[in-house]
Length: 72
Image (cartoon, rainbow, N blue to C red; front, side, top):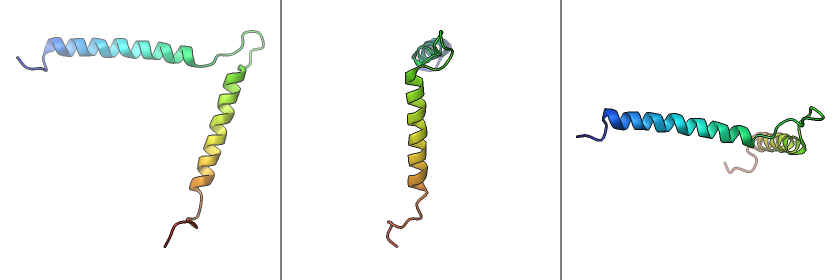
């Protein structure tokens, strides 16, 4: 009897499907939602968006160097 057989394949497939469903549910619950009263994103969502924008800008400026510091 080998490791790869129909029973193990079926159990693996079921575990994969269930794991994906649980991961999606956890990811959806972790994302900041809209505030029900004001219909705009809450403060953590705004802070996260600003942090992402600043990180992207910093990365873009850092990789945009002409290589002045590199020898050669």
